Image (cartoon, rainbow over all chains, first blue to last red; front, side):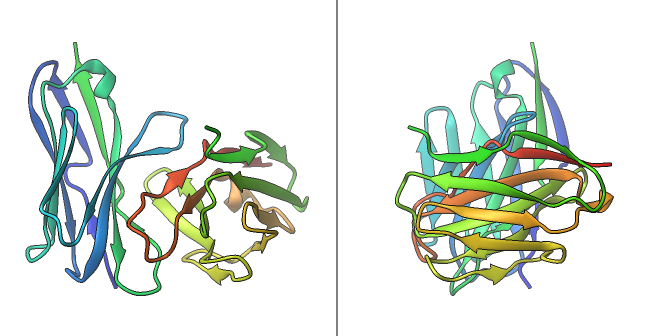
Length: 112
Length: 114
């Protein structure tokens, strides 16, 4: 059974710092991996989707990488801002007729 | 750009009451999902519909039923609400099960069972 782990569960950094959020998964036979952001009291917003054939995707200050063979993905946030404070979740789509499997998220606080 | 719309946003029920949570998407997506989110438990899949006319159980289906009314709408019903069903419920949609399009979420329904 696929399991997705995100460590650390919470992270606090000063404004302006570059940071990396980690996501690991147990079964490398994935179709794609998606990173989401969730603000308090809100739903999930899709940030980036990496297909299994891709190594990375970029959107603005965000860069997500995927290493299927090692079962890892990272979300890099450059020059962090207080507005980046949120919970970040990753989710994998396995090959076959299965729904997304989510990690429990990393709660990020960027301190001004 | 409505995306995924959930109603109601908030609801308080008494134990034993029934209610239906509504979800509609306007992105012509084939697949739709219902999740619940509880502190420390993360997102847990209740039911999903891979395509119009099909529904399947997820991780925590007990106490719930679903209806895929048409391609746009996917409802979740609590027949006899229990305090353990107090949670935030999210509906989501996706282009298709084998799609490389991202999954989109509604803003959630906050449900309290007294």
